[in-house]
Image (cartoon, rainbow, N blue to C red):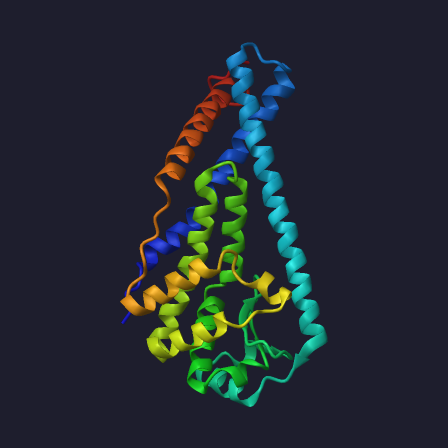
Length: 285
């Protein structure tokens, strides 16, 4: 049995994820109020640099998050266009395995020789498979793939991972932000693998994973797949199946040091904004 991570810790991670962005956005609003009230430049060069730094970081983060949102919306439109034009009845072999898992009502199929399965949709996610999946995998492997996608479905992972990508985009000026987004994606893939291995067996899931990894997906499906789920993700997933436990995920020390230094600088600038704010107790006005 593959070891599971603590659910309370995982839940708290997703609850606390947006808090840094909200805090930064709040300080940026204070910075705007300070410039509007006192004009530019501020009374001292230090105050001017600090408030400008907070605003610049927030502007960059907002632009990057907006880019992620627009791109996700475009990818969703392409995927739904594919479903409209290529929808087919779910092949009986896949439908039978889905019935065992109880996910038939939320299963769609499209015509295609490429074998794939993906969970799509934010608030009411569904599982999309290709008709080629029925010929590329054995019944047991199809069951393992559907069990993997059912885990994504149950936890609304498309919504979770979009939130993680948006938070990481907001902090794009931090070298560790991209690593954290990739870690969130990989953690959900590993969790889905653990659920599938528990119901279908590790060897069956490994066989299905390797077969699907060798099949190129169409662009619409590649866009719908989790960001960063490439060769490095495949290696980590195979390692978990072989060792029976998730591989350790550690960022480079240089990324941590650079991100820590940037955060310290931004924290000092934020404290300066809070001290100057005319709407907070102790403000200069």
